[in-house]
Length: 284
Image 1: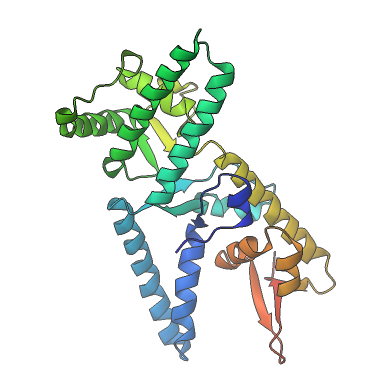
Image 2: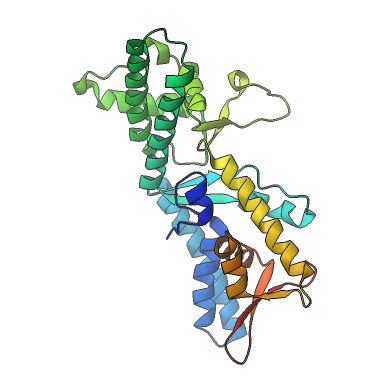
């Protein structure tokens, strides 16, 4: 299940959770059902494998989409090992809505910055791009990973266009080649070149991340919120703060507390009266 947070509402607009949060939520349910530590460990290991398999299955069926976040880097070395786990999980229909949001944002920008000379030219460009977006969304079942290659995009589009021949669907000349199609998806903010030490431009890149126009802002806000929560906890007298206070006083408190819990960076301590306190784990 995905949960809308302050981060999504202000930034990319699409509800998502981070992958470790799903694992933690389900593993916590398993752990609470067993009183035996040894049995609990076995159940947790089995559940973790099951969660991974289920996520992989849902992803391959195009029921969920996984997007790698970029920009969550912090100066703390304790986050280096977790960087690859900053993967946003969302339902595919939410992802498709994000694609259309990217298209509408592109249309707004094209109205302002387009090189087209007339209003008619702009409208034609937007209509052609809308058709291209429809093709892209229809082709998603053939591109279910966090990354995609030029050949995968080309094969997915060709397969989908073969199915749509009865509708006389054709791409305009401006989007006729694979590179032009990739350039358009990058321009829309839907693809990000996966750079390495040998490639420095999109034209020489062969692999691309799926993304959204404002996903980078969401990632940066998550990173800032993590740092903010850590600072508050470190500066508190006993390195702990009442959970209800932390979640209500910080705009991203609810999301980040669950995020940090799922990564083992904090723990919840419950008093005899039932109050919950968020505490940094030893060494953090």
